[in-house]
Length: 412
Image 1: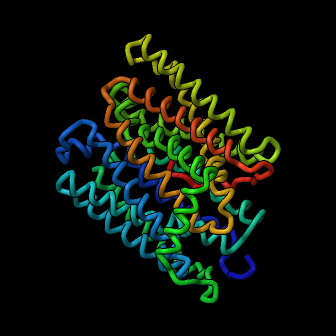
Image 2: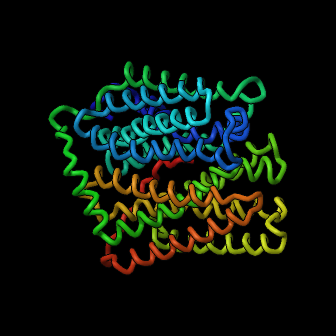
Image 3: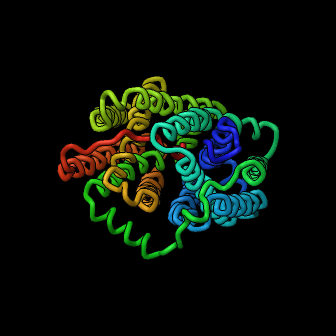
């Protein structure tokens, strides 16, 4: 990074923090979902899922706003604006006196979090390209991967010593630290001469181009399907492990342990994608995902929706490993034909896949009935949808195209 004075290791750490705010804001609070819903008088047991879905809703629409605006205003000011909205949302949650007030705060928090998440990736692209960008992102991802593994345990520790509201206080502190760090130590990475006016018409044109391209649309829909399964899982995981399987405080260990599968998958993909190719890895990963959840569904019928945790735990791990391979590769395949409008297309594909996941994953989560049937049906169904969408994309792909993905720092 010859253009800037910030040391590379410090830049990597800052980007990792900005990126990790999303995963922190979801995973840290998972152990507290039941307590929060009960204390704020949520009407239904499954209403606790809105605490996660509300954040995703804000994040989805924020993605469409912050990315394009940062091309016009530069990188630092949109990140600071996003952090400010994130802090306001977290404070609303901290002081929430009703469940609707909590959800409004979560939506605002998610919208604000889109700023640092999306724009920090643009900062990396400004400073480095090609192999250098891949190298920086690999370091960022190695730090980011620790968040879903450790965050639920941190949330559980907070619950041991005090109220769930302290978790939101922690979010405020993290965002303030990130904002001060960015403001005092990081120079602007997008010079004035490289900025261009924000035009809504360009965003619409990019959206139409993505939708009209069967490869981009097919893989975007496939990403949405796999992410939909995980949206369902994130919303119901606390109910499944802590309550259905009576793991209680051990829920954080189960969630963190399964997150290891995705981390391992990302490492495996990074080391083998050039040799094996994105399409081959994705093809076998999706097959493994579908077969695993077909077996889980069969076990649900055998055990009346309550298969032993010791049996399905390893199956969860296998399916999460497979999905960890799918996330980065499918995102890269969706962006493959969009190199000429990469920034706008990334915002469109990210928002579209998230919207699909939010709507259909949220609907699937609402069917949770105290058994594993809803989750098994959702994961198997979403896997089959991803198969349909990816096969349709491949049938419309021009032969000879291909690229190596840079893993996106996802939501987990």
